[in-house]
Length: 146
Image 1: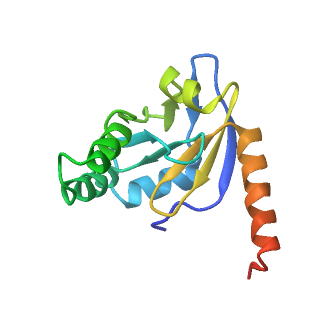
Image 2: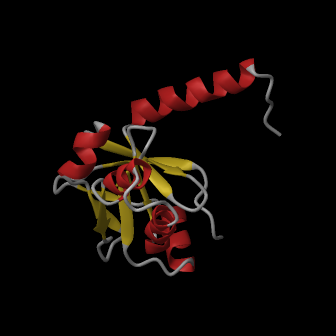
Image 3: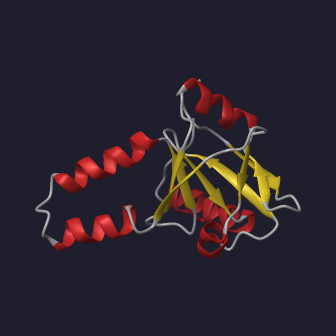
């Protein structure tokens, strides 16, 4: 398995850690990702997490722009100013820091959401509402699953 798929919700423990779902840890191992690049998503109130190659991809895009342009500056502000590196502990847990809590509104539980080459951390109720709205929008446009 080499993609992050599905979603799962886990409770934050008393020390502020949350277990990354085993299906996501398996992908991290398969992709040899040992350190997570985490950034504040550009659209949703979620933290996106992936390997260092995710940051590399953003930096290649930035370097393709005029480095003095507002577009390159804005992208760097989001990618670098809104990002951190994090590591899982030996038991596959991630510390739910203020960086995560303040941006997402996560409180006692985290919903992990697969996004193919990365995954996201959401407040459970926000994810459920956002997914339902996306499903309804697709339904109204006439798109069908399967």
